[in-house]
Length: 478
Image 1 (cartoon, rainbow, N blue to C red):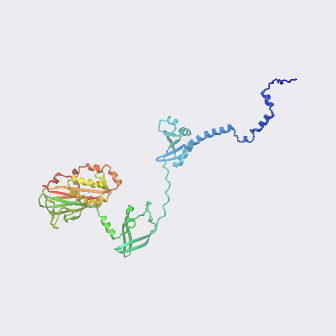
Image 2: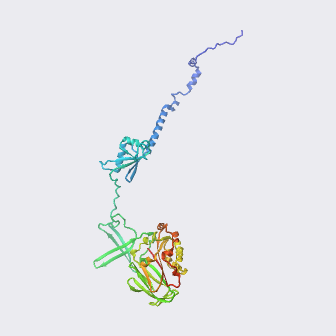
Image 3: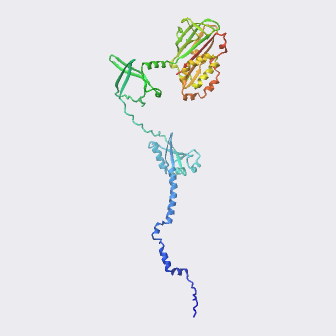
């Protein structure tokens, strides 16, 4: 009998029924997966707690950043200081009092310029300040600001400065060595100890330290029972220009005597006569000037007045009868009173000009040419003073007017008519810093000056029919 395939009528089951009757294979595969409470579950973190922590950190970080940036500037009179901005008005007032340290019963007022206060507070105030009087006004003033400026108003004096450190102990004893030259080739050394019972030998009363290298004069006296030693001198300022091996001996002192010679005007006086004739040339000095060296020698007439008796010739030669010498000019030196000369006053931007040495010499040649001096005369003038000019990096100068020259040294000649041309050059060396003070009185401005009017030059000084006297003088003011 043939068997037909069995017909199985399908039966419907609910999904829940299927899940309840799972096969053993399904159960075995589920058991092989890790359980949520097993080993792998240990590395999981609750998602809800992590998100909450991140939100709290994000909220706290900006708040801390703002707190760190909020600074306070306290101002009292002309003093200022910076502090961290307090959170309360009471802390602000305590901070202000701690800084200026007023008396306990002294009232203190605090105010904030509206430029530093919050926008909400500044737009409601018409005055330039917001006065802090309570916690509310303080909180409104700092609302949303990154920094605050508070001015303190108080009648209390400013806080005292930190006390100075105590002075070092006084120097009451120190050794001293003197190397002395009694005569050329005869030297002696004195080793001694200088002591004092109470006077500090290292510092003055104001704390100035007494030290350095000094040049001066040492007096040693041994007369009977009197034995003393006195020194007077000056401290060397430009020590870099003085050799440490410098020996002070008789040769050095003789050179110092020449260098210490007072400022002297060197004058050359020449005469151009139309014909041969005799004349007296009389020099009259003011009380602030005196005659130094002169050649030919001058004949004294009275106090501060001398004369020369001469026979002059058309070519410029002059005969001096007392010495029986013939020359082309008279040389004399005029010495001013030392206390009268103030270099900065005599030559300043208001009355003179300044430029570098390299520009000064060509400029002076052009000025002397304008004043009618011959090529030979102005060349001699420059060459005779080149040593003094070249000693300076920059030079300030001026030419004196005729009435100023006559007020110092007056000249008279016993002739009918005489044409005077007197050039008196004053100059001094200036530093690079001082040269800046002559910014409006340099070579450019000096070239625009009418030097003929400045010195009183006349066309008659070129007329050979005139009796002409030409004097050139140079004075270095130091």
